[in-house]
Image (cartoon, rainbow, N blue to C red; front, side, top):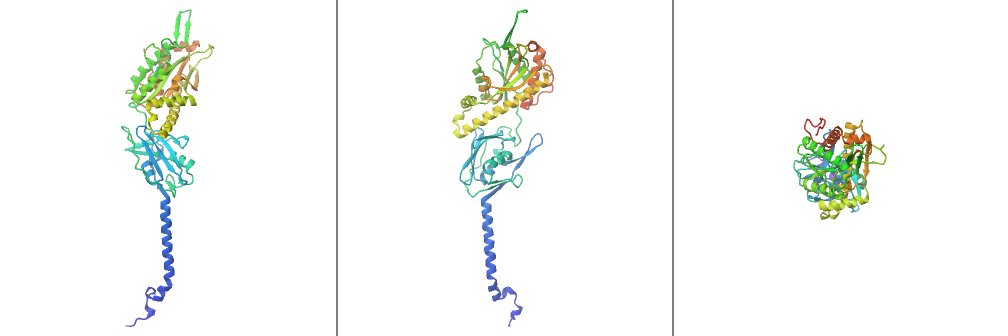
Length: 430
């Protein structure tokens, strides 16, 4: 049977097929080109989605799993379990590695040579480490503006043609009860309060002699009385918080030895804060009021603190680069937390006795007991023995109880520890 060519469909026609081969080849080449470009784009960029964390105040913030980062981006990581911190090396297009040093549960980090701060800390949960968006966004803005793309909301897209072998998943040893949450509140199980009564023994401190009453008022006696009263108040209203005193009787303790005692306690028991109580004096009897001090940073203080950190926390035994970075991070943390603690102490004292005593404010000073401390530390000058009004208050039970109550409330707010229901009652310590 003869088939008419007019009845053939176009694809069955040989001449038609031959005329369309150039178009077919063009389409195949175009498809291959698109696939090549697509694979190159896929190879040159990696996107990482965040996980959101909600803080106690209701604010939400995106976090990125470090294991995911190390598997998708050109980074190398190293974690130091004994230091509870690590390093992430990000590689740029010119093969240069930029280090980011971090500590768990801290928002302070070192990016290359810069000390920076994130309001959201590094977190960990079930052996996984999470870096906050605020930290990564600032880091990439400074060092990788042409590679890190945050245009798609909180999705991190990293463009690079330089690929290095990803590290093994980064793991951390979780602390007991750890969870993926914002900066965890300090707990009674992890915090120590160290109280230091200024002077003592052969060192009376400031003195006032009342010749008419043949009475001698000495700073060492006032500070010991206030410190013992504060310790009793804290132990009563902060169940589980351990309170230590550098001296519990009229003995002389060298200034350097005081910080050594405090650092040994902190090294043995864990996190700690240090509060030193003193009484002031002036050549002018008009000078009066209450002052709060924390350490002023300077190179000499950093040198002393580094030596002490190396002694008590074995920084020198860690990787040298991480050890140096950790020192600067811890030093910045101590100063920052000391400033925060001083602010809360000042606020508590102002609320309690601000109307009756002059508040001279928060100041920075290079006191030895602050300089050698490896923890948040403040020094409180309770008043001036040389001023009659301050002197009468300092020797009164009512003023002492007000100071003790105010300091207790300030420490409660700083530690974020729930106290007994009667803790907000006025302290009445005989």
